[in-house]
Length: 224
Length: 255
Image (cartoon, rainbow over all chains, first blue to last red):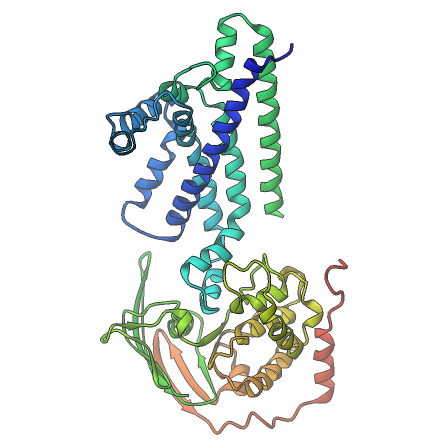
């Protein structure tokens, strides 16, 4: 049960895709989490529901939405293609898009809860001590919510790593280019390569367990 | 400095509606806004600080207008030149005592206390006798120590007015007397005008040079007194006892 360089490629690609997707999820999830936690506007509850949709929608359905929005003829995709000549479909960047879409709600949910847990008086205190809103956010809200946000990011990383359906829809399953570990496991089993499947599954499981243990520790320490 | 408040604010929470409509003016060294809980004291003081925006009215401090709904003036909190002491002190739990006090002097991109403010921070910590606590986190402090840190933090930028929200309610009774004395000394030392809200008659006794009595969102009475707070006699035994309460048992870091 050993892995050749070409067998390792899906694992490395998975780490790269999940890593970049987690960064995007952090930005999007933290921003939206702060917005919904700290401001009131009409349609906030509807927005909250929409942002949670990727958690419950079938991954292929989500993938289809992404194709509609980001495909060459889609709203954003058309704009990208027209102005920059870029298409995300069937590229590793497309896999990042898919992984971001499935994972950012996890950051969003925990970021929102974390920001709601920050004592509003501390933010008021920062204002009385001379801070602008941006400074209040950077110096008080964000550091106090960081543990929750980080825990969400760990879960998002695990989710991004494990995505199958959405990635398949958006980026396809091109060995060496867009074939992530989850897809490679499927291929290996289909082709009867049990050794490869075992190895991939083992590595993926180990990473996931490590992530979940870390997340558990983070949230536990917050409670005491 | 004369402070004039004439504001209106309506609040709706669930099916309970509250209407605040207060007008008073005070030129004294210290003003106490006194009233039962739920009377609108906190709302009033937060409106002066700029933390709450009134629906209508004017707030004037000395020569400066802080808020005027007709003229469309609403100075942001940071430009009002007022300090605020929160009821629970609102110390930043993720920062040490020194970092808390340096907070108003530090720009938001500076992660460490810059050298230019270090001396100033040490001076004020010395004045409050909390130099030994510099490296402590707020959760490691006693109630009296927390209040001193919060006061130092509120005063380090030398505001002209210090607003205090129920400053002694979180303290034990013996400690209250001691902290009242300290606050009086502070007022002289920092030449800062005090505006305090409280529901404790003892605070009125000590600080109520001008007393504004609020009930159900409206000013019922304004009383001006010849303040004789400066030369109050102190029982030495009481003083020693309360001083002992403030001695910190274990400097943190040695936990």
